[in-house]
Length: 412
Image (cartoon, rainbow, N blue to C red; front, side, top):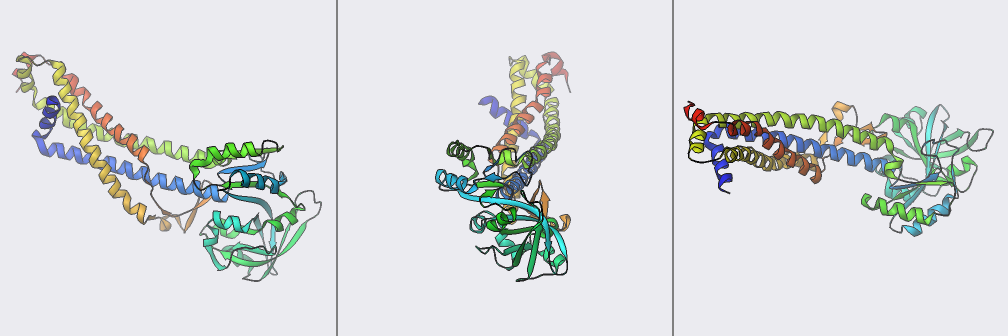
C-alpha cells in the first residue's frame, strides 16, 4: 500500500503532464466505448430484423433448403409441423411462410415481384411491416388481399382497392398460374428495393398458386427473448424427431450472411480500436519515462540507502497502472455520457446514406442508428486499457532497475 501511495504521489509531481495523459486515456477509451455501443446497437437491429423478416429464432424447412433455396423445395405437412411446435413452445409465435417470384400485372403495367405468403395475424406480432403501412391496412383472412410497396404502387399506377393479377409458374405446374388480388395496403420502408419489389399476401393464396394445400418454405419460431434459442432448438428437435425430410436450424445457422458480416465488421473494428489503444499507450510511456528520467538522481539516493532496484521498478509499474485505472474510470464515465444521446435519440445518417432505410447484410435497417450498452466488451476494453498502460511503463521500469547508485547520483 505504501508503494502504491508513493506511485500516486509521484505521478502528480508534474500535474499538467499527468492530467494531459489522463485526458488522452479518457478520450481514447470514451471513443472506444462509444464505438462498441454503436456497433452493438446496429448488430442488434440487424439480427432482430433478420430474425423477424427472413427467418426466426428457430427455423424448420425442407432438408437442404438453406443451402439451396429452390422455390420447389417445400416443406410438406407444414400445418402439422406448426401444431407440434406450438405445443412444444407455447410462448412462441409460429409463423409459416411461402416465398414466390413472378409478375404482378395492373391494367397499365407489370413488374417483377417477390411475393411472400404468410399468416397475417402471426406476422403482425413479429414484423414491423404493419407499422410501415402508409395507406390502407394490413392483411386478414381475405385470400384476395395484397399489400405492396409504395414504389411498386407507383410503377403499376394503382391505389387502394385496385385489381392486380399475379402470374408465376410454381410446383409441378407446366403452365403459368395466376391469382387475382386487390390492394389492401401500401407500405413504405424507405428502401427502394423493398418498396419496389416486395409484396405480401395471405398464406392460403400463396398455397393455391403453388397448387398445394399444406406446404410452406419454412415454419419460423419467434421467441420472447433470443436468449431462449438454444433451449427452443432442442425442444423443436424433440417434438419433430419423427418428421422425415426436414432440417431444424437456429437463427445463426439460418442467417449465415448476417452472422459472417457481423464477425467481419467486429474484427475490423477491433483492429482500429487496438491501434487507438496503442497510440494512447505511447502517451503513457512518454509520461512515465519522463517522470523516471527526471528522478534519476533521487532513485540513486534511494538505492544508496538500501532500496532495491526491483522495488523502484515496481513503483514505476504502479505509476502506469494508476494512470490506467484512473483514466479507465474516467473513460467509462465519459463513454457512457457520450453514448447516452445515441441510446435515447439515435444518430440520423439519412442524409449521408440517402434515405430512411438501408440494406445491411440482406435486411433493411433504419438510417437512424441507436446505440446499445455492451457491458462485456466495455469491460474487456477497460481491462485492456489498464494492461496497456501498465505495459507502457515496463520500459521505464527496466531502465530504473538497471541504474547503478553511483551513476544515478551523478545525474543532473
